[in-house]
Image (tube, rainbow, N blue to C red; front, top):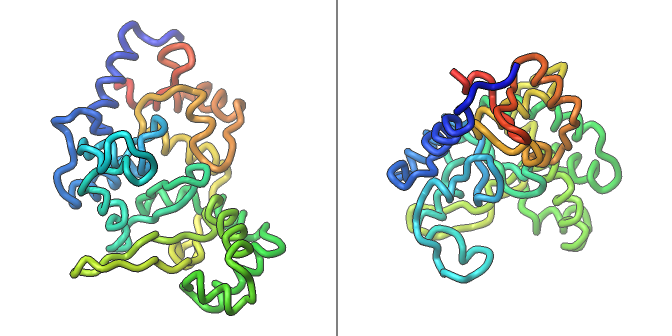
Length: 259
């Protein structure tokens, strides 16, 4: 059945409101940011795709116009990106193809089967680093280098691979009340998300979670949101099952967003 006329503009308006793309919906406080993550289930840090973005929702001028990298972060609210995980209700991962993806506790459980599968499949240096973290608990990079006898390059290579599939996570930076900071330790995923979750179709689960967060998105974008590729057959099946809709050519939306 063809989608009703006018559905796409309606969904875009809903996306603009719910993903806080409107300036009048700007996040005002860290509490607002935490509620935003809980609402959407997942956030990217920088606005680089159709998933909702923490920094885009701040609507604050960048630190250095015309700059690159950190210079493009919000002038003052950048610190929220390191404070969202302080109470343990959110998980900061690199599951956005090696880039930051914040997950609420409930959404993290949807990724759990895929991450635990990656942990079980680890070999070589990856398995050795995971085993070390299992024995030692949260660990600073410099300590792991000494304890494993690795140089910085070797550790970084293994860590990057494991972070990309969520097996290793870190909060990035930790700030105290005086404003001083230090790097956060590395932790295994299963030390953070402790209760094992199961699913017969985890890729479909995370696609649906992403679509709920985004409301409407280009189909090509959806395929590359996460570190795991999304097969065309999975999207076609979700559309056939009525869980996703195609409101326009090349666009996807979560089915309940129609209502």
